Image (cartoon, rainbow, N blue to C red; front, side, top):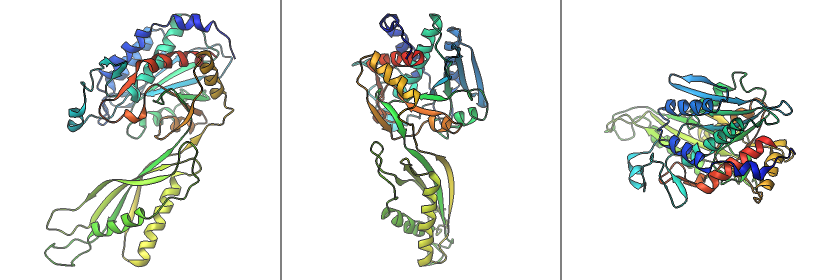
Length: 391
């Protein structure tokens, strides 16, 4: 482990800087959908350039681009990515009524910074930006290159990260630190996710004729009832628990006087390590086949919308050891956990990287009213990221 005068380094960090950065970013309404990340991309790019860190942008779509900054190291170790997404989920009109503050105000009280995206995940992204900026401003050269990757579209189909791995811009990195909210616990394993639209077909008829046509909604209920009595086979994970699926969207019908000939349900599945997304849809095909044995003209189609693999990082991975060392420097108790959602880390793993997740904030308070992040955790994140970059 590289040794630095840690307390001297840490004492010079201005705690107000990261608060201002995160406040600034929360006030930028980078809502997705529809994909309004342009202001955030400009902010991140300009901040990193102001610290004299070489920065480039990669276009994902019109007015939507990823930001990539690379702080050169000594070349003694492999480059490390610190990544965060710039988009946030929308605030509905009903949700806005439940907020105690302006959702995009970035207000501070009770030791927390409040606002949409404060935990998910402008706090983590801002902390990584400030840590890299501190190194650059003070002429501190890390053992290996440090790469900031700020992505668009994570809240939808992770299109920003997917577009990055099609290039070679970060292909030399071996590890990625995802700065998502974990309460500053180190996450070494992550659930997978996959979802699909399943369309059940029927035959239209005039709704005044009893028994006419084939009601696709009734047929869909057959499948839903099959799902309700079925548990996905899996081996329970000590951190991540069980695999499961649920129906999250239903669309059906033409108008009230027509027997519907189509009904579509969206099925969202969450997977523990040891299970792959395609396994889920093979199981769904089995359930459909069982219904067809009872109802020969039953017809359903599966359209897979996205597939994200679960993952586990080996306990002896160098990044885990680096972060353990950072915990020791900060006299923080080492805490390890799993992540119930999915992150861009899944995408970067597809090109051979190992991932961990650690960041300020609480996943339980995101995608809902009164999202917030602890100022204490925000300061800890800057320090922990900084030490991890140097160890």
